[in-house]
Image (tube, helix red, strand yellow):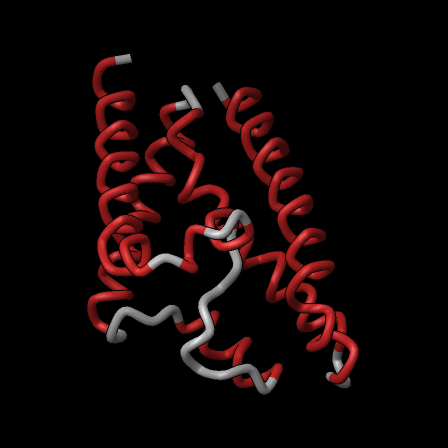
Length: 144
């Protein structure tokens, strides 16, 4: 079980690294060029992509420990969004650090492919996706 968990972690770290590289190339390069502590910004972006990648695609795992962390992560993030006026504190801090507008959304996978340009995704599509994948994760924990 632990080997499968570690394998899942490596896969998701690798995917997060790819998404981070695309983000830096397409979106965040201007920030990294102008800030003093470039490593800090890159690590914040990478950490944020790890969280987003696990929350977006963690339901593909069949490891019950990984799925449990995936579901717990969803609960934490949803409550955080509810209590922080639908904002992510990591995105808010990164926007402040980079002098980006505070309404700027983090370009995780769905942002990188263009979904966040659409109001339907930002208003309810993202929540619907999270609810569906959360339920898939719960199902897999208990029935697989």
